[in-house]
Image 1 (tube, rainbow, N blue to C red):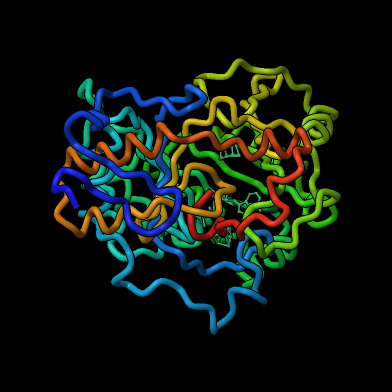
Image 2 (cartoon, rainbow, N blue to C red; image 1 turned 135 degrees about the horizontal axis):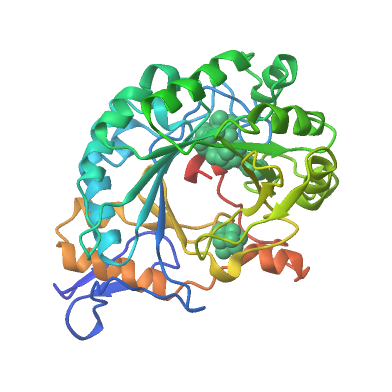
Length: 371
Ligand code: SAM
Ligand code: SF4
Ligand code: SF4
């Protein structure tokens, strides 16, 4: 192979990255085929989790025999940081650590510290956040803040202890997650967002108690439509409660006013309590696709880059990291991959474009690439 050409090995879609005439230099702005910039990177740091939420890691599939990635397959903190630096040179300004459950990755604060030292091309620190189920947050919030984490998003699907224990399916008490949220607040990891996945017939009765609990607390509650991610959760459209219903249920008790989006590519539609009690958000991935300005890339625990939550294939970057590619060559590979992107699964689903799915390869699991 020509020594200037680095082949992104493995999977079919992976393009070649080359230096010289075909190189994609890092200019701080990288556009895909639909003119969407790359600004947001989600990094999965583990494929393991201590919860078994049925919509994500159903117990029957993720049982004691499930084969998780061996430690040697995971990207090291240095490998993750090197990639993050190159992504930043292409325009990424926000990094979200996720999983599986990211707080299960040992010494995560060491990675946070390395990422917090990175800068955008104009010298700004990255916006560094983390999504967690909150189970270990009370123990870790202070160390994460000290390492340079800006904010956290906590997933919480109900306040009623019985409902919550059923949702996480490992009998984990809601009180410990609420304590984690308080610890994150006290540590200064705000403004905190709380994400609630709403499943019709399962936890919809928790919408109003959650709204009452977090209203006026400074925590932004966001309701997420149950999505057809992965291939194991047995998703059915009739279990999706459209965000419009959520807004009308909350609005019937507390009048709401729509808010303008604060940033392009923002996934949530925001609503303010008319009496000044803060705001809520709704993420309508199923009923109102937002692919047209989706600027997110996802890096799996073992270094595969996914361009869409619903992708079935990733671009394997690990051979580049563990081979002899230099930074410019890897940056060029990232550039080629993003420039070739045309994914817009949710829009196609909404238009009922016949598939998207039929005969399509198995989609990657949410617990593998993170939300
Ligand atoms: N374990 C962490 C947590 O739960 O916050 C981080 C990873 S989890 C995969 C990230 C987010 O994806 C969570 O907020 C979770 O509720 C959401 N999620 C997982 N499966 C989903 C589905 N089928 N539909 C909608 N959201 C989902
Ligand atoms: Fe674990 Fe998060 Fe998936 Fe629940 S949503 S099973 S907490 S990774
Ligand atoms: Fe982005 Fe894919 Fe979701 Fe559309 S379906 S918003 S392209 S991740």
